[in-house]
Length: 369
Image (cartoon, rainbow, N blue to C red; front, side, top):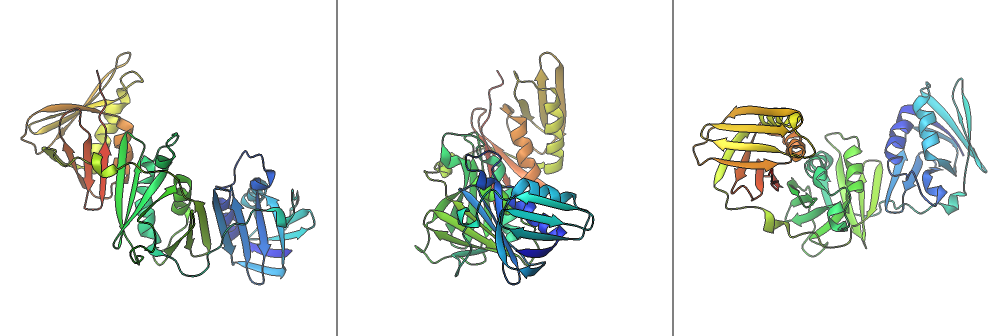
């Protein structure tokens, strides 16, 4: 194999590919990427056996076709630190040489190309199509609420629920829930694909990292227990999460009687300031609602107290409720509208945040003692 690469294009590809390469694995070959030089392009693949990336690099000049397996982190570091605009990669049996104008690296290959796991490409038509920008906006408004570590595997991913020409993305960690509605460019006919699937958080994060332009669209295909997603020169494949996602509709409050319209930036600032004086013991901030005013307060017994006042248009009965400030900060960062609706019931009932018609967030209260 002998290929001249545009260094920036190769570096961009490796930046995405190395995000699926496991740092620890009993199979050393999984810490590598497989590079396949074809007639006019180079295909680079990486996988951890759960999620895979098949990346086509077209800014190349292929002098000799071939295939080689290379340690991913070493190759990425060499390309990243290079000062050249172009790099020459030459692969022969057991070695890969990377040459710049003043540098020459030789990497040993830990395996034969035929030993690398097959990473799916994308063949034929897809089941659904969606604008990449729309999907990435939906990922930003849902992925943050997934469970980071949980024995309930179903909440380690994001629920995709297809309804007509809408895709609902739902995520929860048991203490909060985010739901975002996204328009589909084309939807499957009824019964062609399952109405809902659970996509692992890792695969969703990869989709969010793809560089997007306004014209890019995503094509999705479901094959057995896998989702295969194609966008421009990248194909991401992933096993689906098995298990049943919680019946989230049951926990979305519909009878709250206290409804506030708040400034997104103003509330974010108030929550951040009130949380400066909280501790592991106090864990939360208190929201005190009264006529014309919302007070955010934090308390750390060994440090002191914080209080931030916000004028509001409210004439209902007074109440106090406690929340985890980080869970409020997380959602306020992803709200795109200058104002949002905050609905509350009793102090032991979850709060409901709405932004426009396509986003809502349910947040369990905490007992501040």
